[in-house]
Image (cartoon, rainbow, N blue to C red; front, side, top):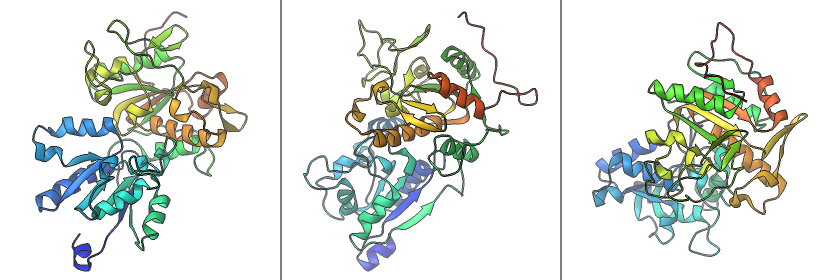
Amino acid sequence: MKKAREADSKEVIIVTGGPGSGKSVIALHLMRHLAHDRHTVVHATGSKSFTRTLHHAVGTHNPRVRKLFGYFMNFADAPKNGLDALICDEAHRIRAHSVRHRGVRQIDELLDAARVPVFLLDDHQVVRPGEMGSRKAIDQAAAARGLRPRHIDLNGQFRNGGSRAYEQWVLRLLQLTDEPATEWADERTFHVRVVDSPQQMEDILQAKEAQHLTARITAGFCWPWSNPRRGRLVDDITIGSWHKPWNLRGESRLDGVPPSWLWATDPNGFGQVGCIYTAQGFEYDWNGVIVGDDLVWRQDRWLPNLRASKDTALDGTDPATFLHLVRNTYKVLLTRGMSGTLLYSTDPETQARLRQLVPAPTAAAPDPPAPVEQPT
């Protein structure tokens, strides 16, 4: 900040890191420090759920505090260098184009808005068409203005829960890296299991909740998402005899069910299944992931199944783009847990692949509490 002011120039900072590496913690501490020193600073994201949760956490009844949190789209008409710092958290969600001005890129609006724009991102969390927030894209946008960003990589520095080894295992599993997939080996503080059914997944996670741990189930967007009927959520997700509703889409509680932006943090969120749009940006102790038929394993590679997807945001994408985005989607879903992950695929061949890479637990590495046997 001091250097930018003295040189009457910009300083662009790009902070990269995987899930749990501390990006959002750094963002909030940085904002607090700058605001304390009387710098003008705003924290912005592209996620309504994430920003609303921050509002809820810090308490935003004070209008001055509320102004410290915004969205990327709020800077379409911002004065150039109107802020000392703009902290763009979850910057992988930056849109390719301005929401207001034709022919203008959102990244340029964000670069213009502050003397020191800071971007915190994970290259493997771009999950929608039109999102462009990668380190390479931001580097190129800055270079076009004659700016040379400073890079900070958190991946090798520290982690706030979870497992760095597990994150690398997920990247290999989904073929998001050139390194081949490997068999998972449990760590002392992180466990992975493949379950036989969604019911077994729910039972194990329910036991974790009973131990005062947080647990959630997420799934690929392979089922319709109905509006509530007669004041109740609809059990859209049906797998055999197991059925559950998606999380609530609305912004107000419904018969005790939390709004979408509180699904990951409210204790009553356990009864619903989350999708990428409610899980991204959040973490919980135990993570259950249902891999739907939109991504299937065949012989030696992952294949996309566009017909299985109910995500209208992916309508019209070509198979290669769909495969890229859906693998990133599952990468996000698979890396929400800080203590462990339970896996299940609705596709038999994919389920067999998961079992191949996640061996059954031994006596030396006991399984999580066994659920009650369910009738088939």
